[in-house]
Image 1 (tube, helix red, strand yellow):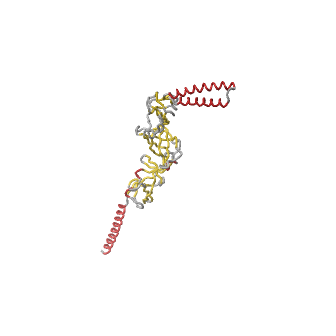
Image 2 (cartoon, rainbow, N blue to C red):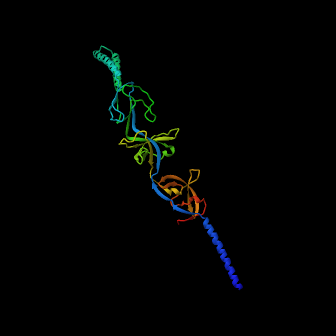
Image 3 (cartoon, rainbow, N blue to C red):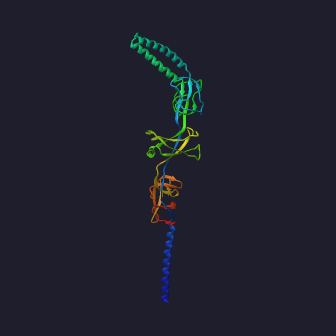
Length: 346
């Protein structure tokens, strides 16, 4: 009987000990957060820089004359197309008539002294003096004639008539901001192609080079994109904004894109390889702009800061973590740096 009592007591002690250990293990398992992880991928893609810009004409000129005068005739209406060399405006010719009368008088004097010179009746000095007056008169006639007729220097569209027939034209600088600031009678624009101008800051300027492909989006054409290339980069920066203007040329055969429209320009940079993580795996520290991911090594969490390079749909290309690293996808809000976790998807 004593022997049986001792055996039962020993068994009770062993059972109590095992039960205590199981309780401790169960409590420990309950306190370990359960997370789901994924492996960081590596992808090849073209990074994109996005800028806001404004549409401008490929060429623009305010057509006028170097001398004041009355506008007699404007041969084209706003919106009409013109070709290079077309007569656009005629101004009054009173000054031309006066110049022609003076020229005829001087011409007769020149012809007379030319005959006398042949006979040796006048000196070379007298002849040179009259010839100089004749040459100056001829040049004056040509100058005045050019200022009574205005021709198109390139093909385009009459975008605006800044004066009407009968008004007196004179040089009056200071027109609409953003366009040509020279005085004129009509504004001529070449609208195929058009240019998109945008500002690039000094941080991104080293990534932009002439010829890079771009896609242009406009609020005026929802859902549409227009393709082009970086056409020009100004070789200096503003001392106030520390940025420089960049131009992109895009086709406008249908003339639907108008100067002054707002545009978004996506510049496609050369192809690169980068680590890629799901967007929902990124944790942003509250009150900051710092982004992190939580890696898992030997079931231990490590918080790693990352820098976003490019958003690719539901993924983000990042710097700061290598391809193949195990990171937390679900449960990142329940862990801290150095905490032990249990991975549910292993």
